[in-house]
Image (cartoon, rainbow, N blue to C red; front, side, top):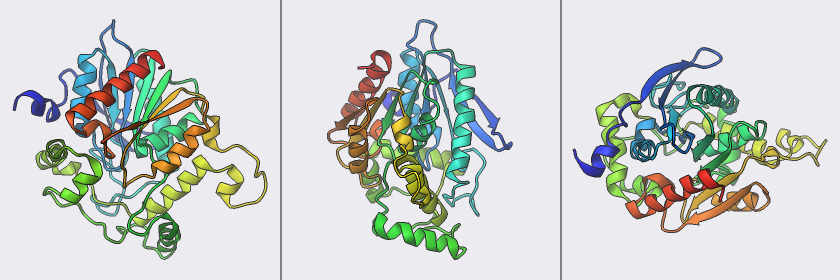
Length: 326
């Protein structure tokens, strides 16, 4: 391998990997690279659902080369962290509250292994969970960038209006740990339809399959009904006042968690996204004094795995904002 493909299919040298026990002892896989003493600071890269750290090897190379201290991890239930579904391929959830507890532990770890200033970049589900975390912890990070954050789910083909009550029903019927209808274990071959959902770059899309072929334990299938039900509940916890999120009528004027975030945020959304609902993101960011939103023209969901020209623009915007706040 040479050139770009070599950077996409290898992690940067000098990284340190370790299994970090969470508060309950659950093993979560972590990695970090020390930055240059004269570098721009430290960055925690938070991936999305079904991701594993190797998918962002190219970005890690870019950041490490630029002098950043970089840390990342595989979420509980994904990558090479301990799995939680009834099989290793079931994209189940331990509960979004558990993931929030894990993120609190992981941000504390990040601040121990790398010196300040501390920043974060979070993609999709990771962006959703980082927002929930920041609603209670606004002094930990200097700045953060959210990439296509999960502030709404499209839940195709049903749409959220039907998918929400159906997921709740399936959980009540004891089917919560089953794949959603139409889901299942992900095949190893190239999936053109899935590629179009994620990126316009077929070569970068193929990198994910290459990594899984080298280590099949990285693979994860579609979500379960329990994941979908829990995701809707976590969105309510972020976006609605506490009483409405609980389904009660008292305290309706209390602020939603999102309104408590004061950490400066840059939110980047793709031009087209059939996985998360960026209409919700546009609406909520418009009401946040601490956040600004920009659209990335020509992009699909995975902004840092897009074509080279789009990727370069996104990466430059991320690092520029983290260093200057503009």
